[in-house]
Amino acid sequence: MTGVHKTQEFETYAMWKALPAFLRGQPRQVLEKFGIDEEIALTLLEIKTQAEFARRFDIKDPTTLSDWNKKLEKQGLLSQIHAWARKLTPNVIGALYRNASKNGKAPEVKAWLEIVEGM
Image (tube, rainbow, N blue to C red; front, side, top):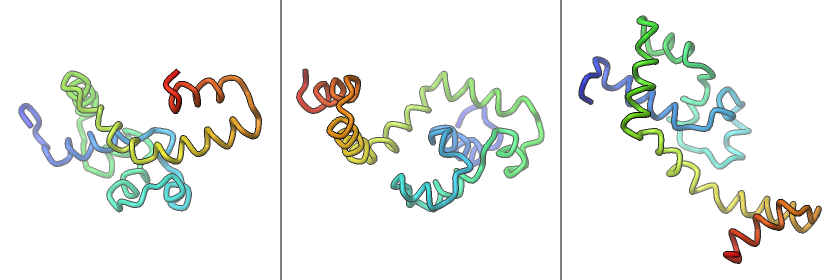
């Protein structure tokens, strides 16, 4: 990666940033219920904050992660989330179906019709 001193740490940081923030720090059992079974993802999701990431990967300069965030945004590297999230789509559709058929609330029904029926 051009302009990055710690290339491996940067790539690991990009992977960590691409994971959903709401899953960071969750117990392994919760992560596995979300369909996360890759050891690297499980390990990275143990890290809750950027400060914790910096400590774990021995990044001492406080501006490094800010610089990396700008680089990730500029290069569009955070779009990796789509690859992670796509394999969970069947779970989301299943939950949407359960909620729509059980509660019948308009937002769930509308979402179902838009996604499944293309309306």
